[in-house]
Image 1 (cartoon, one colour):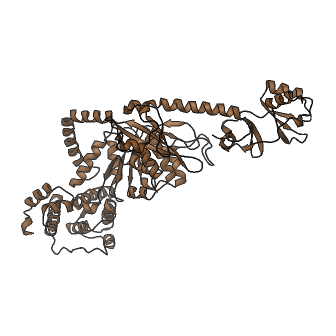
Image 2 (tube, helix red, strand yellow):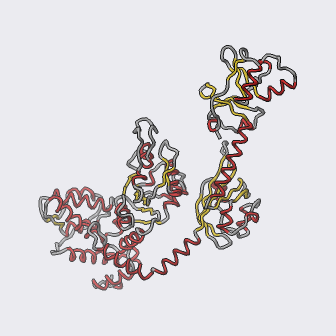
Image 3 (cartoon, helix red, strand yellow):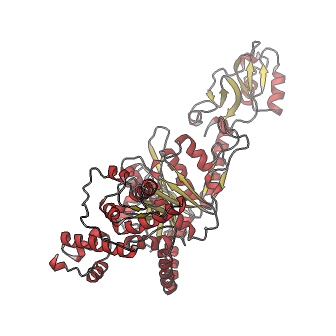
Length: 573
């Protein structure tokens, strides 16, 4: 606690050379318990309290000058100082200054009473918590648990108080302990914990340090997810048949969707998961290289959710300076900083309330901002920059990154507790080089877009398509889109057989030249031609259907079916 939290009003000043003992008695009887005395130069000389008067009466010194009754041995401090040093001192009061100006007097007895009230308030808050709260010292000894702990776990408080978490884990009370992990790592941790009574809790352990940076306590909160898991299983079982037909219908809708292309088994499985995740509010982390279509995944998840009629907002965390990102996300109060609007400003979280917020490149946010994001995920509320009032927000959060967040956690550049909060449902989008069977369909899709956009009627020749199939596409779908647009807008011919800009991209890539041009009249035939070619090469290289399926990212059944269709034999290739 700081002194500025407890000082009230200005101090009462008395002039030691101008006022009498009778004046002091009247003041201490009616206005205050302690006065500050000053001399003729208005300089503070000491304090005089009721206790000093009582001592003067007992010693029959009321006729003495005031200067002989005052206490000149003073405790002085700043409004920003902590009260701990004062509490441990011999002084009965403290003179509190701010920039050399006396702001007030703090009486130790009043301070103790205030601290007691604060402790009672904290006790009431602890007992009112719906979540279990569990406090240990730095050695894992249990100091206190609230009533919710016994209600959620079924373990009486007197059964564990005074014991250590190390003992209780060894005896099978818990399968693992957040307290032990916090003591070991010095960091906050979050995971599920199984209790011997059959309960399962989601627990978060947080370290508490003193001002010297020493671990003194560990606070763990827990939430029962046993009942939630049971209800989830019942609902899934009751709706299994309905969900089966719904998923099949969604797959058909996906394959006929005009806003994007799905041409590989792995992407069909991913989009099926995306459709399913649209129906729930779990936090999703979309991972993959730059340009693979992570934003499309987030958008479709929103479009297929009950939030689809609410805002969908995308923020590129890497594109906004760190100094601005916090105020953009959380907003700010009036006068929060120089240049702020006088009426304040709503942040993206408030604007997106009820909808979905897609945080792209989440791995680029600062460590300090990660703490605030964690609060949103845990509490469902934000505090504006410069504000003190918590504002509840209802936002579905989807994040994406092309970075290895777990490696960042190990390097202490990304919070582990935030990582687990974001990584509830991970979705990995493979790069285009691992799903090349989609290239012909993507090319046809982009070809149609740019022909319509520029009023043209150009066509990518199979010769050029063959070269596109051989390329590794480090820039993924974004690079492919750019190449198709360049080819269409720069080629003088309607039948595009090459693109000078593409040749510069693959100068270090060996491209097999097609010696004989095969006349293809439609896209389906072109796709089949190149699918057969890719499958034939893969069979020659890997020999077995299992290895071919693994290399091409599809099921073994799919490989066998397509090989039979094209007359390809694993034994002869």
